[in-house]
Image (cartoon, rainbow, N blue to C red; front, side, top):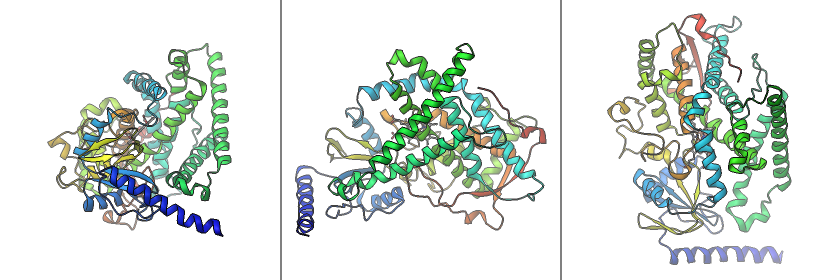
Length: 491
Ligand code: HEM
């Protein structure tokens, strides 16, 4: 009893001292007034990037938000994002040590080289055509009357899942009937559990003083790690055996590439396992949600859908399917992907970047140890930068094409600077290919009984932005029957 009372007095007192120190020592960006101990945690609405964008309207484009005793600085305009990126060149980020530099180099130079991306194209095209085939089967199923609604993310998720497991391990866990094997189920369960554990970190991380009240379930973390390692090592062993049997010919997927590069870069087995899982976590849902948002916009905007159909029919026609090699001749399709990612970046606050030294941005201090978030969602909708910012209008990029791979700070769905997404080109290819096939093969309308303007464009909370109400739609085939076959490859 006495101890609780002391703690009740002591904790806010320490907090007050801490915030007084910050206020006297630094000129911090403005922001909502923090409460003792919890900071602004209780003010933050669940969909954080919307909440931060609202606060930016009140306090300006650079704001302070306290997660417990951790200062988070949120930047919401393109000029400051650029300044931050420039300042970032001189910073050492928390995990930006020699190990990170090495692993990052393996990613950019080796795994995501344009040669390898091209070599892996057949896998992407296999998966995208498999998606088209399964949607078609749904459409023509005699049990299902034509015009039956489908849950779009089910099909998009399958492409993203199969693509990433084949890319990482050279393994498809789902058979041609769409049945997922035991290993695949374990794989999915591990991904879901990883997300759950990640979310549970939040409270303990932000309020270190209260960590005793929210103890980390260390056992659950250890179990998760062991489960992940065991599955990965089983797959690795199977793979090594198969490789020996086939005479040792190396394939293009990441696991084989990493084994080949093991000595050159001095990579431990743990590093290889960690890297493969980073790819899986970062590259799976981001791709699927980007396409789901694009399809929602296309259904809400029949004019855009119609223009895209015209382009596809003119360039590809109705006697063959599109491939990634057609992209340069399909500018409108590429602008659709870009416009969707402008309005709906998959990770609206990017990844938090932590400063390891004191920095000044726009005259404000960002002290060492703070987290910096760039609200790319708000930047993509900034009326100072974008004409009719909230309108889904791919034509804007005909007027001025804007880079989206981190060079132009008005459009940052893949981030920018040192930590820019290494999978950006792969993501763009897959997203564009999925949208292209979905449009070329089908006409899209809202689910029965729902008007286009009634489609819920709200978001779910979380690092990756899912639609709050998963998109349901009706697909009507528009090409000859023989074009709805999966183009399967064995690689
Ligand atoms: C449309 C799809 C994708 C989007 C929108 C996307 C977006 C992003 C963003 C915003 C970041 C953080 C950048 C920053 O904070 O500066 C990131 C990081 C990352 N992405 Fe992607 N990504 C996509 C696809 C992929 C794919 C397909 C892969 C791999 C197979 C991948 C692998 C990664 C990795 C490993 C990182 C961490 C990089 C680091 O910390 O150095 N991403 N991505």
